[in-house]
Length: 72
Image 1 (cartoon, helix red, strand yellow):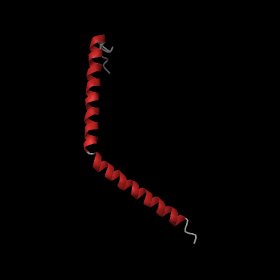
Image 2 (tube, helix red, strand yellow; image 1 turned 180 degrees about the vertical axis):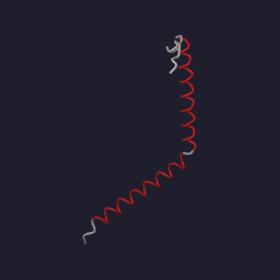
Image 3 (cartoon, one colour; image 1 turned 180 degrees about the horizontal axis):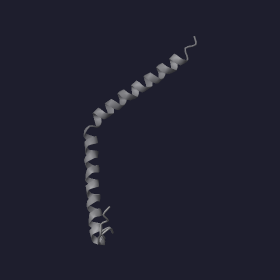
């Protein structure tokens, strides 16, 4: 195995690290904003799907409960 001569990580200046952190933070904020805008634009279909899934879950649970407690 060949070992690299410069095995130490490169040291970065404080200002360079700060600029990199600010850029990454700005990109993250932009992506979160983009995701929120997308969710707001598809809010009505998501609400409709959530209501339908909720109704299906309630019906299935009531059906299972009635099937298990069929004592009459």
